[in-house]
Amino acid sequence: MAWRDDYRPGAFRGVPFHLKSATRTGGRRTVLDEFPLRDTPSTQDMGRKARQFNLVMTVIGTDYMAQRDELIEALEASGPGTLMHPFYGELYVAPLGDYSIEESLDQGGLARITQNFVEAGEKPRPDSQPLAGAAVNSAADLVQAESVEEFEGKWAVVGFASSVAGHAIAALGTASGFIGDAFAAALGYATPAIATLNGITTGILSGGGLLTQGGQFGTLLGRFTSSIASLILSPGNLGIGLLGLVRGLTGGLSPFGAFKALTSLFDIGSKVKPVRGNGYVTPARAQQATNQAAIYTLIERAAVAEAARLATGRPLDTAGSTLPGLTYNNREEAVDTRDVLVAELDRQQLQASPERYRALAGLTTALVTDLNRRSASLAPLTRFTPGATMPALVIAHRLYGDASRAGEIVARNRVAHPGFVPGGQALEVLKDA
Image (cartoon, rainbow, N blue to C red; front, side, top):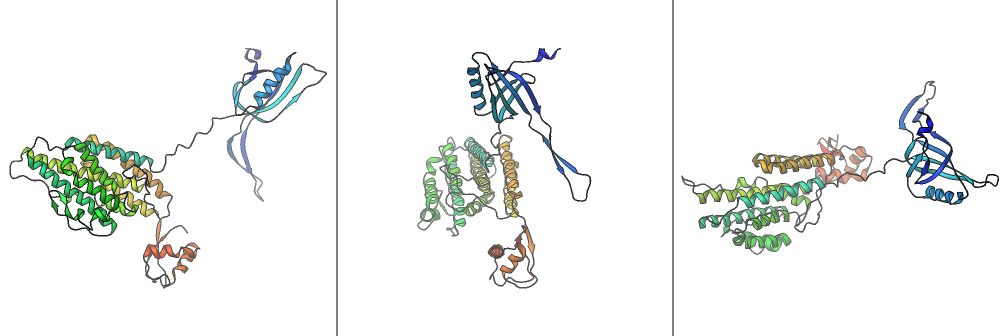
């Protein structure tokens, strides 16, 4: 096949031209390394060079000026465009540098336009890296939604003896008391011992209890406990109410306090007296056991999902607003947090039905991935034992070359006096020096 058979009429952005001549350049981006007193150099191949195409284009005819102006407009347009190269076919290129136009009286009706083009790749895509904590946040939403759905499917009081409703009210009062005590312990003050009266925790609602000292959470808890008698008839609303109580812990406490409160609810069901019958287990007694198990399964799964959210920096309050999450000063803190949560998630997976296992496993995967990435960027801890008693300033300067980090050493090791750090006792310090 003759070369003329493959020759194509030239055009750029659809504007035609005739080709007078064309050159093409390319190659490799090779870096030459030459060293003193060494005759043989070395090279580094940094990849292929961008291909460049230099064209001398002509427009000719009585109306050549109109053709010339169209081609100039195409060359000055923003961004890459399609070049129909007479020899190389269709190329996606961008004009590189200046163009030049040659016109003369000797050759009237003709203009030569010279332009260099460079191949244009695809536009860089936006960073697809997800927002920190977003995967855990979505997985936690799924776990909590499925937990409420499972609770709704298991809960029942209608159609059973009145003892089932009475037990349900008492069980919910005890459970809400556990949640209230978790909040109170994280705040740093003790609540009265749990004592239920018609299922309501008197210590929670009494003057000086959480209702007066717990702020928004105290109000939320009081509203829930006062509505228990009606909520037991609506499993869906009851499940959402329990979930709201657990999620409310993150809104009224510091990130560390909220994490402490949530983790105290892990395996909380094991602290409750199981429902047992005398001999034959009646349908009413069996439903009491099912209801009680459903309460604590929902609380535990809601707590571990919310703690995972907190650990990756994206907890939500009851209105769905993002709150501050945990921050980590060193790698060990992130790893310890991960291990605590994974242990509880593993326990929940062992107890979960096949239908609910997948959501819990997804949360575990997202959590481990997120915290592993975070921990990799944090400095690990190491131990340093001063040979003699000395000021923390001296130790900080010796370890980091920065005496201003003395306070960090004092705080981490709870040193009584920064001027006298005892010698011979191991200190925990960041290994970033």
